[in-house]
Length: 155
Image 1 (cartoon, helix red, strand yellow):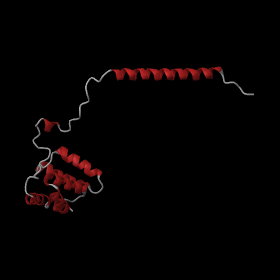
Image 2 (cartoon, rainbow, N blue to C red):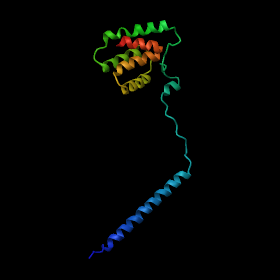
Image 3 (cartoon, rainbow, N blue to C red):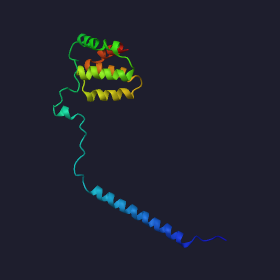
């Protein structure tokens, strides 16, 4: 003989079903109300560099010299990168600090923001971030051939 389930069990199942269906209908009603009202303001894009837009930054985002002859660009990269091979000890972390001090603070080739973005990209790529960062700085400053030359000097 099978026992019949107690009467309160069927009542609790039916009450939970009715409460979940009422919750679903209230959620659906709220969603319909939100869809019927247009948004108050469109989403504004994030301003990546407000000081550049306002012309209040003393340093341009990137200061390149690609308009100069190749010989001049190669000479500048040689003059700036060659001394670094004698003072860059301590691994990639120390190299990044030296690159920042040299090319952002002293030479003002890049802004802090651009340097930080290049550091993030170079950190995500395989290999030493400092080597990729040194290449990227020379690439932005002088073009592909000076960047390859900077890479060879840095190595």
